[in-house]
Length: 405
Ligand code: PEP
Ligand code: MN
Image 1 (cartoon, rainbow, N blue to C red):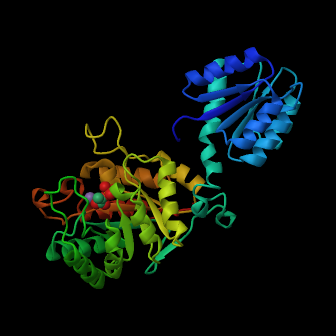
Image 2 (cartoon, protein in one colour; image 1 turned 90 degrees about the vertical axis):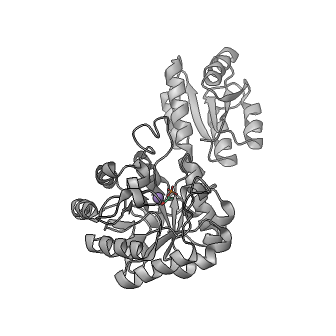
Image 3 (tube, helix red, strand yellow; image 1 turned 180 degrees about the vertical axis):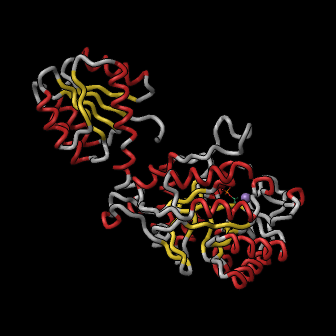
């Protein structure tokens, strides 16, 4: 999750400690060993290890005492008890006191590696208490079994109904945008998307219409009644974009633009926070925390595909649907999926949309162009945009689904 993990191994039998240290070092961890329980207690007081493996029975200090000190000094640390054959009852006692698991001696290499890896992975849930406390599910039991419902002009995201956000990648013109806005409304969309400020890979590509684009979006909202989601990239433009947008979109490329996150966090407008194209779950949730920390917890998370070895071969990105469950486990914020950027291919969007909903997505954000528009003439993301008729089919198939979190 965060570079090398630091692990402390405590065992009065030196050979045992060395053996474990070797296994864990080979697994890529940074390991310290001590044969003294007393010394272990001093060490864990001073340093928050990622994991501590401690023998249960030691001559000077009991393993339970080491565990208790760890839980006092750094509750995030995973503690794994090392037990001799026949001391399972004490191991169970230790688990009741907060140990993650136990390993019985003699142990197998794989067993040690697996238990330690699992313990380190689940640390993200304890990390909630510190690194992303404002949006953490664990810290907010009032959201037990549900998400926060974020309301945008009467549209509720995170409730029992799936929300569909649709529209062009970029606002490419007035007629262009109004035609698509009317069509997505007709197809049953709940909100309109479209970028007036576009994060383009090349500085020579179409950059968006800027404020003129925002005015067009406002007109489209006026005509269709659809709330508007639009991207803000520059912290200096948060006020301006906010005069037109109903939801700020923070794009994948801006996910860790901390001054931007802070700025939208100071507003009262909902924020759609896309996952960085190579962001870990923790990085993404910490980015949301930057917004929430300023007082704005109306944040909608959006999975939009991540970069993998395959990206570009048969799709643009790899849509990480596995992350949906992990997001729900760690935060009460709702999560939606962008099948357009997640696949980069219009023909893959319908199936990806349905799969996302099956996986528990609470909404979809889909790029759409006019029914008869020429893909070649579209300046931004035309090849991954679907037609309104296809959007209608998708909505018909997925919208009956009642979301029960
Ligand atoms: C977009 O929504 O058009 C966009 C640029 O998305 P992302 O930031 O996910 O690439
Ligand atoms: Mn796009």
